[in-house]
Length: 110
Image (cartoon, rainbow, N blue to C red):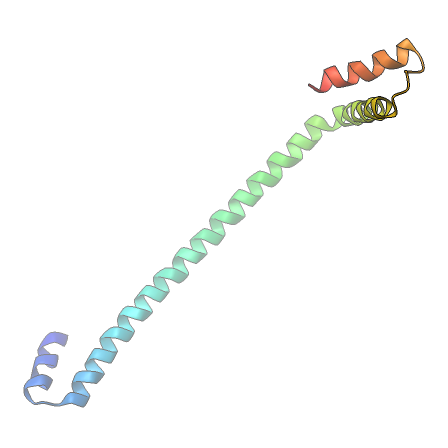
Protein backbone atom coordinates (compact mmCIF):
# COMPACT_ATOMS: atom_id res chain seq x y z
CA UNK A 1 0.00 0.00 0.00
CA UNK A 2 2.77 2.41 0.93
CA UNK A 3 4.68 1.53 -2.23
CA UNK A 4 1.57 2.06 -4.37
CA UNK A 5 1.04 5.52 -2.84
CA UNK A 6 4.69 6.35 -3.38
CA UNK A 7 4.48 5.35 -7.05
CA UNK A 8 1.38 7.52 -7.51
CA UNK A 9 3.16 10.51 -5.94
CA UNK A 10 6.21 9.99 -8.15
CA UNK A 11 4.06 9.76 -11.32
CA UNK A 12 2.27 12.92 -10.31
CA UNK A 13 5.66 14.46 -9.48
CA UNK A 14 4.38 15.46 -6.09
CA UNK A 15 7.83 15.68 -4.49
CA UNK A 16 6.56 16.97 -1.17
CA UNK A 17 4.37 13.89 -0.79
CA UNK A 18 7.28 11.64 -1.86
CA UNK A 19 9.52 13.17 0.81
CA UNK A 20 6.77 12.93 3.42
CA UNK A 21 6.21 9.25 2.59
CA UNK A 22 9.95 8.66 2.78
CA UNK A 23 10.14 10.52 6.09
CA UNK A 24 7.25 8.48 7.51
CA UNK A 25 8.97 5.22 6.55
CA UNK A 26 12.33 6.31 7.98
CA UNK A 27 10.74 7.52 11.21
CA UNK A 28 8.77 4.30 11.51
CA UNK A 29 11.90 2.20 11.12
CA UNK A 30 13.81 4.42 13.57
CA UNK A 31 11.05 4.23 16.18
CA UNK A 32 10.81 0.44 15.75
CA UNK A 33 14.55 0.02 16.25
CA UNK A 34 14.53 2.36 19.25
CA UNK A 35 11.70 0.45 20.92
CA UNK A 36 13.62 -2.78 20.32
CA UNK A 37 16.74 -1.24 21.91
CA UNK A 38 14.74 -0.07 24.92
CA UNK A 39 13.35 -3.58 25.36
CA UNK A 40 16.85 -5.11 25.11
CA UNK A 41 18.12 -2.63 27.73
CA UNK A 42 15.24 -3.51 30.04
CA UNK A 43 15.96 -7.22 29.70
CA UNK A 44 19.68 -6.60 30.35
CA UNK A 45 18.87 -4.60 33.50
CA UNK A 46 16.63 -7.42 34.75
CA UNK A 47 19.34 -10.01 34.13
CA UNK A 48 21.90 -7.78 35.86
CA UNK A 49 19.64 -7.48 38.90
CA UNK A 50 19.26 -11.27 39.00
CA UNK A 51 23.03 -11.79 38.80
CA UNK A 52 23.64 -9.22 41.54
CA UNK A 53 21.10 -10.99 43.73
CA UNK A 54 22.72 -14.37 43.14
CA UNK A 55 26.21 -13.01 43.77
CA UNK A 56 25.08 -11.29 46.96
CA UNK A 57 23.72 -14.57 48.31
CA UNK A 58 26.89 -16.41 47.25
CA UNK A 59 29.18 -13.81 48.84
CA UNK A 60 27.22 -13.86 52.10
CA UNK A 61 27.39 -17.67 52.21
CA UNK A 62 31.13 -17.57 51.52
CA UNK A 63 31.63 -14.95 54.21
CA UNK A 64 29.73 -17.04 56.77
CA UNK A 65 31.69 -20.14 55.76
CA UNK A 66 35.07 -18.39 56.05
CA UNK A 67 34.35 -16.29 59.15
CA UNK A 68 35.84 -18.81 61.61
CA UNK A 69 39.10 -18.92 59.62
CA UNK A 70 39.56 -15.18 59.18
CA UNK A 71 41.30 -14.60 62.48
CA UNK A 72 43.64 -17.51 61.81
CA UNK A 73 44.57 -16.02 58.43
CA UNK A 74 45.17 -12.63 60.03
CA UNK A 75 47.49 -14.24 62.57
CA UNK A 76 49.39 -16.06 59.81
CA UNK A 77 49.72 -12.79 57.89
CA UNK A 78 51.01 -11.01 61.02
CA UNK A 79 53.59 -13.74 61.66
CA UNK A 80 54.69 -13.74 58.02
CA UNK A 81 55.14 -9.96 58.19
CA UNK A 82 57.16 -10.34 61.38
CA UNK A 83 59.39 -12.91 59.66
CA UNK A 84 59.96 -10.55 56.73
CA UNK A 85 60.87 -7.76 59.14
CA UNK A 86 63.25 -10.11 60.96
CA UNK A 87 64.94 -11.07 57.69
CA UNK A 88 65.30 -7.40 56.67
CA UNK A 89 66.76 -6.47 60.04
CA UNK A 90 69.50 -9.07 59.72
CA UNK A 91 69.23 -9.94 63.40
CA UNK A 92 68.85 -13.50 64.66
CA UNK A 93 65.44 -14.62 65.97
CA UNK A 94 64.69 -14.23 69.67
CA UNK A 95 64.33 -17.95 70.19
CA UNK A 96 63.81 -21.15 68.23
CA UNK A 97 60.11 -21.40 69.17
CA UNK A 98 59.43 -17.90 67.80
CA UNK A 99 61.17 -18.83 64.53
CA UNK A 100 59.11 -22.02 64.26
CA UNK A 101 55.89 -19.98 64.63
CA UNK A 102 57.01 -17.62 61.88
CA UNK A 103 57.98 -20.43 59.51
CA UNK A 104 54.80 -22.36 60.28
CA UNK A 105 52.78 -19.30 59.28
CA UNK A 106 54.64 -19.03 55.97
CA UNK A 107 54.33 -22.75 55.17
CA UNK A 108 50.64 -22.75 56.06
CA UNK A 109 49.93 -19.90 53.65
CA UNK A 110 51.72 -21.48 50.69
